[in-house]
Image 1: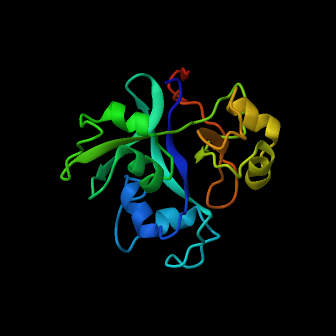
Image 2: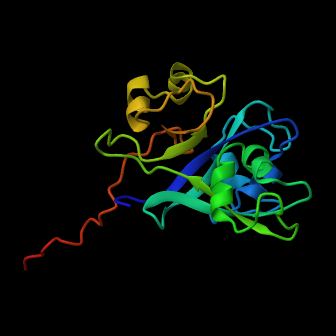
Length: 212
């Protein structure tokens, strides 16, 4: 990976009955630790949520997670998920991870046959991420991994994100934003509402020669 970044955001669509605790449990990482009391990492990126126990169904919650270079040279994070009764790869991908991962990805990354996932199992759940692309823009360095839904379009995501349709399309070449499924990468804002700029991962200051 030419660039990596400490942080990405996962856009988690809320179906009926999803609570922040459930999201916190499924997307448990060093950045959003699962802890009964500490919802701060999530709430910092969701100023629209005034009460952590009452969240609007049919809206999206942004969950911060680490964006790391994975074997095979792509960016993502591996979450661990404890299998529960009646879980299938499809159900885990669609319901528990709100389409942030796919059934195919789960099948490829776990040794259990789809028809026989043991109840005691822990699944590897890969969520992809992006750190930006300086050839598109240096203005954006934090990205949302955003699963498309049927109601989404290029113009609706441009509106909600505050990023032009042209830039969105250039970050997601060849993607049809009206397809209703699949993942797109959308520039995201920090807790102050600003877009963090792209940071090259080449360490600054390493190659400077000091003359005395």
